[in-house]
Length: 396
Ligand SMILES: Cc1cc2nc3c(=O)[nH]c(=O)nc-3n(C[C@H](O)[C@H](O)[C@H](O)COP(=O)(O)OP(=O)(O)OC[C@H]3O[C@@H](n4cnc5c(N)ncnc54)[C@H](O)[C@@H]3O)c2cc1C
Image (cartoon, rainbow, N blue to C red; front, side, top):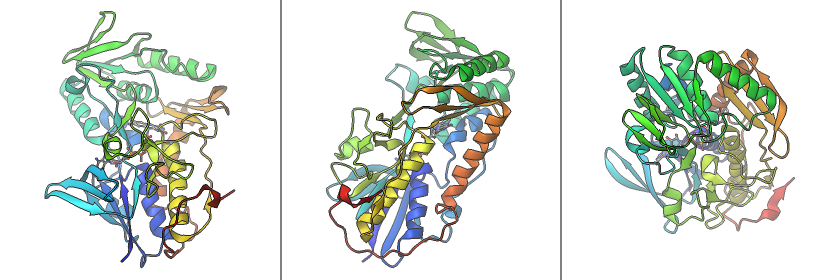
């Protein structure tokens, strides 16, 4: 019987890992199944563009994994039983149970509502494709006349507000944030950001906390009422509760705790990558939920799976946080680098060049899912049996 590897989620982390494993492991010894809620790879980094009305390239998983032997199961994961080593999945045909020998958990995250009343019922978000399409439909209803309020002052809020303002110039777009808009940016990046918001005519309300969302307004904790035809909640991400409910060891926000090789500390046959993982980066801080982190943790997790199942040494992937690329519509952007302590450097690449660089990075990330070895030949490593995971197998 083949060793069964089940990958949960086919986003940036899961799709990369599954494709990479399929190219390194011998198909006679390993069977790889990917479970994903949607039949396509969704370019999550472009979902604000989708919400604004732009079309994204269609990337069916069947094409992404063509020729790899990976089995794709389009279904919703509802639970993981880490003792019985099974995953419960639901689709139109009903509930099913998949057995695994090795599990790679990469279910990503969704919008965090911070338990603010009314967010779930009345607000929109752009953290998943169905949600982005719902916002788009609402904006279509509003046409050229309407008020949109974006809540949040970080990356997703900035990208959503500027994209909507650029693509739908008739809308009156505002942004409310409890802190400073882009307050973490270096001096040059922040100056550029504020100028861009000014150019787009986006009204910014800093140091204001929204306490509840209603159908046609968002109300701040100081009583200020912001009339809004569509409130876009972009105040952070939260992981799905499936990991915590399964009994895997998690931190307070539900992310799974792992060792340096991305094995769950409580269940070492479960490996984790992407937004779902809690791991300390090279700068001594938790890696942020980001596309780059999905890449680093995915590379480390696949190296560990290959090492643990085929007896090979496990190379170390650097878990670095180098900075952020931020789009400000299609023609403008900021590429903010950070230093070794995660503080923004004073210099940033700004303007059209930053927008082009960001677009190329996104295209490369999507391309890498079908080319996870980046042109290097794959291997056909044979199964040598599971062994006790040990940090001593790490090769520098
Ligand atoms: C609008 C937007 C802009 C962003 N911009 C940036 C950026 O500029 N730079 C950056 O670094 N990061 C950015 N991010 C964050 C980035 O998208 C995430 O950090 C990244 O997608 C994490 O990868 P992942 O594979 O862990 O999760 P995802 O890419 O979210 O993949 C998770 C996969 O799991 C599937 N899934 C989830 N739940 C289930 C379930 N129960 N059953 C079955 N399948 C399920 C999903 O359908 C999805 O395919 C942005 C996010 C958003 C929403």
